[in-house]
Length: 256
Image (cartoon, rainbow, N blue to C red; front, side, top):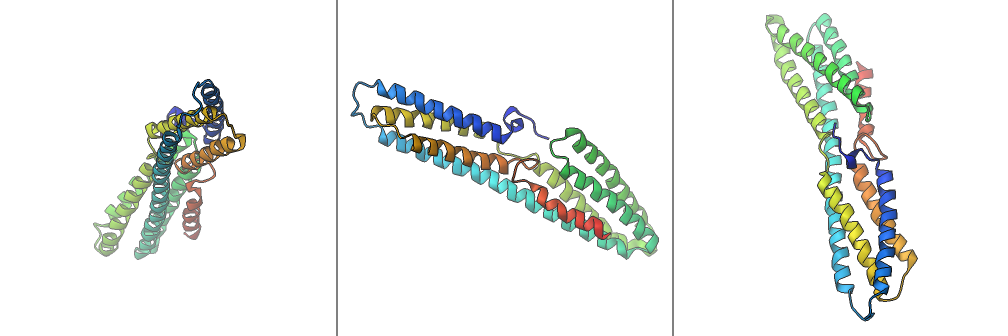
């Protein structure tokens, strides 16, 4: 599981700190602008360019986090489909072998459900991965062992590729949960928000005009967008996470 100061810090706390910082910087920029001798200086063009660049950076980062969220959700659905296919192919074996396969599939599903529901519990995540690896080996040994039997060879020819796809999809999902927007881009977004806040305050100071409502609105809207970006990018917490896809695995487990 990924660890860094920015990633480990709760998104709500981060944007609250950002909002207070941005507003304080606006006030600071306003006071500096008031000291400007020539109040006729036009900084509107520079400010417009900065705000346009901030909007572009927000849109770029939002697109990155949104695409990663969609990929994770798609991978989880694909994994559910692969597991379901492998379970159905267990019925190609005689009842005794099929029941042994299904018992292992139940354990496999239990480890996957526990992986998704572990949240930020590192110990629980590692335990689920270790248990999943044990069940993976057991399933593979069963399938490969029965492939030497003439009576089960045809069933094994269908089961083994299904297991391969299931194991590959699981590895893809595990990796997708570790792929996020780089911290350097998030840090750049936070710094640029602060810089834009300074120039907004500075421009207001030069013009001897300060609209508190507009300033609060700008800071709040920026922080809300950044919060959604961070929330999309953190699958194990927040309001927007990948937990809703776990019900697919639970339905499969209950149907066995």
